[in-house]
Amino acid sequence: MVVSLLVGGSAFAEDNEKEQTAKIAIFYPKAKEPYFSIYQEIIAGAVKAAKDYNPHISYEEFIITKQYNSEQIAQTLKQKKINKVIVLGRLGWKLARELSKYKHDNTTNVFQVVSGALPLSPSDISGVSLITDPAFLFGYLDQVASNVKKIHVAYSDKSAWLIELAKKAALKKGLILNSHYVTNTAQAITFYQKVFNSDVSNQDAIWLPLDNITSHDKITLPLILEEAWAKEVVVFSSKPSHAKRGVLFSTYPNNFALGQQLFTMVQGLEQQPNQKTLRH
View 1 (cartoon, rainbow, N blue to C red):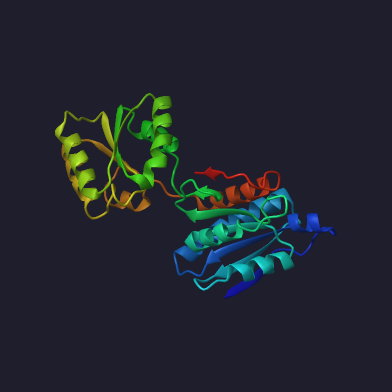
View 2: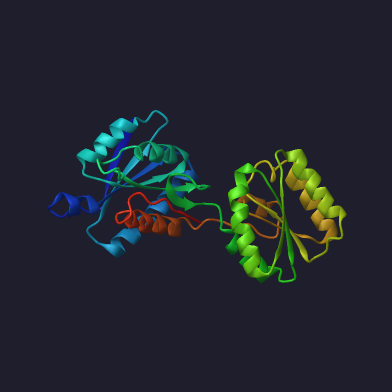
């Protein structure tokens, strides 16, 4: 079932193409706090960016549940002459994949869809990921611990794509990246134990990516923090909750700015409807 609420003004251009440009749909899951407020902050950012771009753009919000019907949603969007869509959360991402299957005769996408409010990895859907770009992490690391020269990180298939970005970022920053591929948490622990048993110092740092295998909250994290405190090794993380557990720093998403980015991306798809872009 889809519950819709109309938001914004009702000024639209007369012809269909301009009318579609002036309408954007936002889908987000039915959720309790704090997730509901997060979605609202993202939407507020998107609305602000849209109004700055064109005061006649309006939004229509759709709350989706697990029982949503993608065919019904597609039909509703067509009836409302809406082809720009922003989706939030995991349910929204699933909907985005289903909407991407609708094509015009020239194989371009019927709906221009971007996804957010999710730790996205590269896929067939454009969007803004909650996973922070390693270049930003390494840049902040240089500000708070400029003595660090080497970063150690274990990664699995889930975070392998991120390591490729990290290698480029480390090279630009003049850092050494000691990355080690693992397939399970036990292998990750073995890797970190070897790191701590080597000649590490305050010039070393441990990076915990958003990866349940290598950065397990109850298994890997306590071990790393205990050893790191004893040997004065910096630990930083891509998971916000780790900041409360004792890592030097972690990153929190700017939800309002994320919404602004999503609007910019969905507008960009008007010119390149089949382009797939992932931003951090």
